[in-house]
Length: 218
Length: 242
Image (cartoon, rainbow over all chains, first blue to last red; front, side):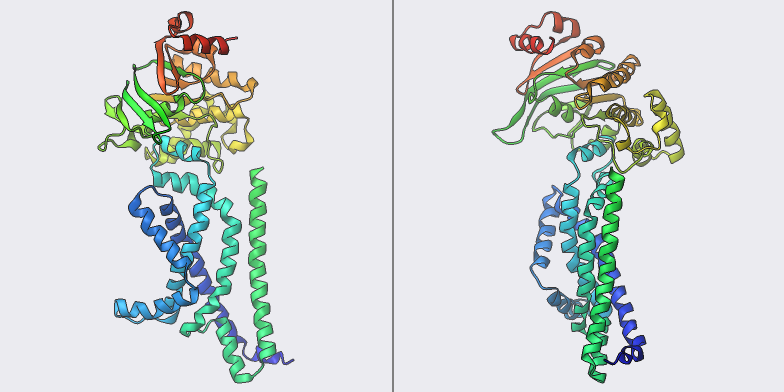
């Protein structure tokens, strides 16, 4: 075992981890915001909203993420005529793709709030959007916390897929170091350990949030 | 004034809920709607503020048609308070926040004004000391009184009550009825779906009796109880007044 290979390349590798973290934050934040909009739209009674959004969700849920990252990277320049850097392309691909998954979590969360709450909001003169924002969503988000955390952890793991368009995120950099130094065992064990610790921390935080919710409810 | 003209409501061909309902409820009147469960009482109530959209007929509230395209339904609802069987307080907000939400968001009141008004209303329904509590920390009777205060915060000209005491423990019913009786004395126009016949007799000006989606009887309170015209009404009353 040559642990020194990690120390020697630490700035390079952790620079990649920083990029991975950034990508995950944008993907989760953007995906959730778009997911809330899509999830709410799928519960709309307006056919012009419901059908296109449902089609969108089904479309992206039926594709591998890897393919979507590829597509966007090569498609966006063709459509807009401007080339896109790898990071921006990856962020857009993740948001567009994960929003479809988040929307399903959001939809289930909204449906878990009783119909009477919506009626109470509407009867007081609030609009549908105001009722959703002030009455339904705060309650829905609380029940959604466990699923949101689980899915966010999955997204964090999936950020490594951005290597296909040449983004030098954490795992890609480990890979590059290995190509130079030929220390596969140490490097990949280390990479696994980092993913494991960070994902466990995420899961643990989720559990704590869940418990806190339950205590407040009693 | 509420004018209900020939209103029919159905969810599908098999499930018709309301059949050609006609009724007129004058300003300041207290009208109790009663009848067996499934008779369409609550649905009719929800038609009045457009929470339920009916397929035929029309309902005018102070001359404004509830379902007409040009009607600002949110503005109309803001002037109609509604109280629900299961309270429907917002569980993630304190009592005070429950009451100030609509005045701040719909009436664009400042939070300070809304809170001052909310505290006055809480005093009126007798639970000023619970302003900072969450609904789950209150008894059912207290929750329903908060719900009434919340509806009153919009200064409605009309109040709708949908079985406000049906989900309450027996010992809490009276405290809610007392608040409603006070409100009635102040001249509020009230439409109430309730099984509290003692309350109805004492407070209501008129009684509407419904069965299977139709109004069978609409009479002033005294003649409804003393001289029910319809067999079905007599049957219902004999069962409920024991």
